[in-house]
Image 1 (cartoon, rainbow over the protein chains, first blue to last red):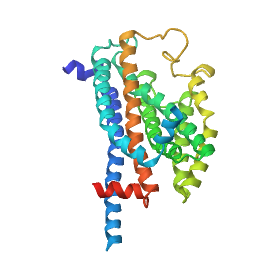
Image 2 (image 1 turned 180 degrees about the vertical axis):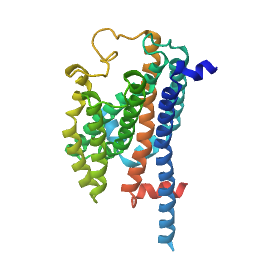
Image 3 (image 1 turned 30 degrees about the vertical axis):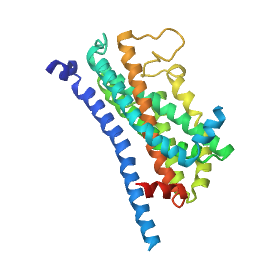
Image 4 (image 1 turned 60 degrees about the horizontal axis):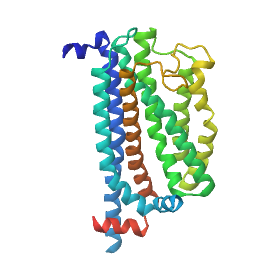
Length: 52
Length: 246
């Protein structure tokens, strides 16, 4: 296991690459999901105001 | 038959509902491919005889670089379709692709840098492959900037499509840069006509990871397209019906 984490001495380069890819790709789906939630909430409020 | 399906698929309410149903399955497929690809790439693939374990960066670097070019072509082609046939969904696919493509380009550059440091002894060189990939990032940023600078969505889409189409010249330059100019970057090992010069145990995880990244693009694209659609169709009746049923 520690051999695996060590990556033959290249641990920093390998794991940083994978880590950055993970973070960037995660943000790439979380952000649009949050925006979508906000959009629907905003539209609902608008409609409720319009009905009154 | 296909035309009829495409016509139906490109109608906003249908696209919205079918993309909602597709997303969980795509996520499942993505996670399965990712798990298999990561296991294959990090565990079962043998270490490279020259580069040792540092070569494992290939499993994020190469798929990200492939996606950076693939997404650019999708963005330009759907931009052209929007330009010619004025199909709303094509415009939306085009502009929604830009931030995803930009992030893959950024990933290709960063992981390439992290691979270059231990192998070439430098984070960056101004050679053809690296420079043309950096230009690709600027093209994406230009598309995003131009789109947000023009108020009217449809005018913005048309302007962006032209910029994207002009930038397509850069794609073959990126691909052939390692052959046309001498470069620190290694030549193509997979995408060439001769047999790929890479061991099969190294190649399979690479192709699986490339598949996983493609599915990821589909997921991120659908999510962004839905948002752009809601943004553009705020006052429409179909959206009102969806809100009422929620």
